[in-house]
Amino acid sequence: MFTTYFNQFNWEAEKASIYSKTQLEAERALAATHRTYEDFKALISPAARPLLEQMALLSQKETQQRFGKTIQLYAPLYLSNECQNICTYCGFSLDNKIPRKTLTSVEILQEIAVLKEMGYQHVLLVTGEAQQQVGMDYFRKVLPLIKPHFAHIAMEVQPLDECDYRDLHQLGVNTILVYQETYHQADYKTHHTKGKKSNFKYRLETPDRIGRAEIHKIGIGVLLGLDDWRTDSAFAALHLQYLERTYWKSRFSVSFPRLRPHAGGLEPKTVITDAELVQLICAWRLFNRDVELSLSTRENQKFRDNIIKLGVTSMSAGSKTNPGGYAVEPQSLEQFEIDDARSPAEIAAVIKQAGYDPVWKDWDHSLQIK
Image (cartoon, rainbow, N blue to C red; front, side, top):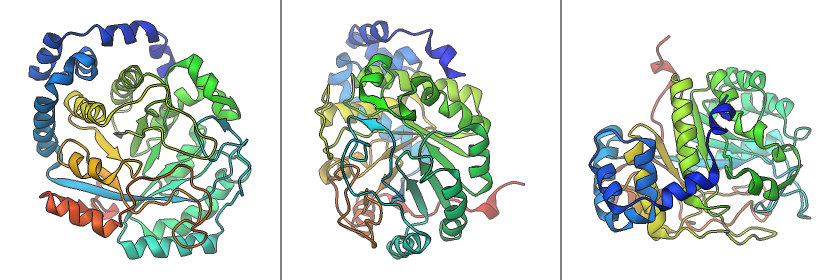
């Protein structure tokens, strides 16, 4: 379990290590042919900031070598905003007095019709964390309904037991995303005061359960701004290293959600600037040539346009972060406010203008080796 490895590291010691890195160490990391965890810490450190242009050029080169000039497009489909957790940063938090909604089978098909008209073949299913309303019984009911319409299904739902992930795998789920939010254990407890999500250890070990269930791809990440973003990212890098060694049959992705406005409101503990987010994305690419890097519509259009060439491999577009947001109930409460509201067609045009190919479907079950 990752917990054993995680407990070998100390938050304050790792933070001090990052902030004590020198520009010379960052330059050495940039020149290395194989970059270590210590190199990653150097590349995300304040000392590496003057090297951003060189980092960006090298990140662009290494991304193109591994992934070509392509950007995968996907859309989130929010199935429910029911949630039994109290989280300080989320619009779905139990203590927010909002109308709750879980999509019916008919409503899901209405949402799917809109997504298919947009051209989507990859969908990310999202729910709040409510075992009774949107637990495995609900997933067993709706996944057979959804699966025929998409080439790739990802899920971002409550952490589950290993046997449940095995069932999801059999139901056709390709990818599971689970964000630790923050690896700072004390602050984690501050932000998760009620519900199953308050169990730090259970959430920390969720990717282990996903990996043992042999899910095709595992997505991790932190909520940038909830704590010191550099230290959180360093622990995420440790987590990825562990997962790749332990569950080598799976692929991996990293996402970069920044704390966004929502019902209830929470000011970021630390602010990560646009330049720092570029630095972080490039550092991830230089640290790991194979990991998929994803950016959502939380970011504004100028930033997303400029980041296309610098390391990301997938982007959402035309996103709605509320259940029924595409067709059924467009005015229901969003989990968080999006910033880039352009349509998928507009985003695809921007990607093409940058000299890249928007990819709606990048693989098929018929191509899998039996």
